Image (cartoon, rainbow, N blue to C red; front, side, top):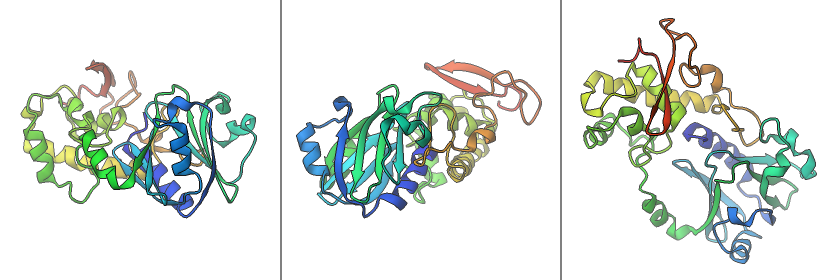
Length: 288
């Protein structure tokens, strides 16, 4: 599933290319992806200009001149691919899509712009969604999601992090980092990498963490997420950026997806365990 760095990468790219563009038409090939009546969706979208592209947690938000906003969640295998010009659907594998597959089969929605460019929503597993919300009610809508603070926001200070941790002393630290109610946007990949950076075992209870360990986790949150954004995210599965290119952070991963391989620090073997139905990768020697 695309996490904060991947979604933020797409947001920045789309914000550079979509703002000011006017939507000429929408092509809907899988109506269930749209969580709104199709006539209502088309009326709000067609003829509108993109005013801004925002992000909250793992949700992309396209603000429209019509007074509505489009909320897009990529979930497990969703992709947003921007094309400068339209091409036949059969040729879309070259534009970035599901690896080793004909991606046009998984294109469920296309936004066509008046200048000939377009935005494709692909989704192999079909867990992603597109919602329509009135922009004036956007704050209220997002509040219901109960997302935690954004880890890269200036307002997210060490003191804020300490306060959140203090509310969940019994939580496993890996699960704590992945809980969107605690922190927004962190998932399996970056929780593993942050804990390796901090030298903290994923099964540790939050209440057992020493202040120096908390500081190291906080430092890792900031550094690793920012570095991943600079590398345009991690293409560990089906993720591509908005131009159909793979993210380059995969080469920077220290533990995620490296089960059985040597630790980059101590030459010990990376292990993988299950925590609450999710995998955790770690080095038993370096993480205590």
